[in-house]
Image 1 (cartoon, rainbow, N blue to C red):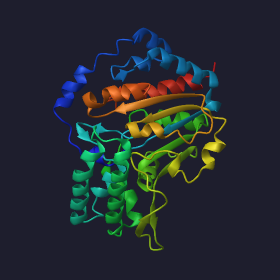
Image 2 (image 1 turned 135 degrees about the vertical axis):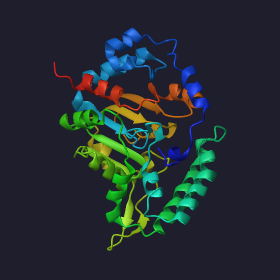
Image 3 (image 1 turned 30 degrees about the vertical axis):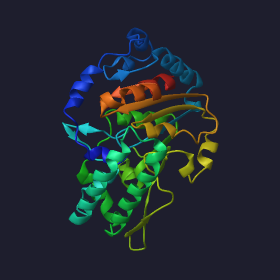
Image 4 (image 1 turned 60 degrees about the horizontal axis):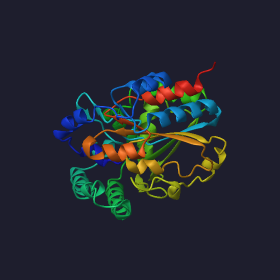
Length: 324
């Protein structure tokens, strides 16, 4: 999820939109869903084809934990969208709103947001049209941040002060994956250094985690000078930016995928997978519910509307890892 999501104020009409889509799909049989995993009967769950979801869960269960890998976005997917009525920070927001950048820089970053964010969400523009605009946005923002001479040693403190929050149930999610040796591939358009610090401070940064994101590059004095590697933004989260091409080759025996995202751009995160048998796509619809509901239902197998938990993912993982 890009940093823009935090700064956009929720529209008052969103509450009405949420109530309008509260009714499940006409094709959903909640009793069948409850028989698979009870979490699918939550009020936040929407599914275009519940029967297909049931089949996929059973296929993942048959494959077991040794055939499974999890691929997930971070901002507003593993991290919370809101808490106590307030928006939670993304990785970029944690830096943008901290005291390690100047007021002038903060204003310029806000101006970039005001210009590029409407283009990012413009329903009349194709992804191909948006792609170069996102490159411009991220590149300009990175240049501004590098001018601030940010000190690496201060990142841990600004993360702590920002009070970034992972979704409810994150301990079970990360713990189940680690205990069952299921790899977690986090594909983020945020800042990798900040992302890692968030999960480290939460006590869940385990060895089974692989992160691909925008990483800061510091000089010998620990001062930010640039960002490493290929720029990752909302619409290029695919194998074109994977530096470690061997990762998915090493995971070729793990041909069942559980994918979690919160934008349509997250749907390409599994493109680098060398062998794919089954994939369940879970999409967090955090905002603009009415505008995006149909697209999400067409794209994700399970859509979670304003759900601040990892309950559904945990329910699926529990089913897969249950030892009879």
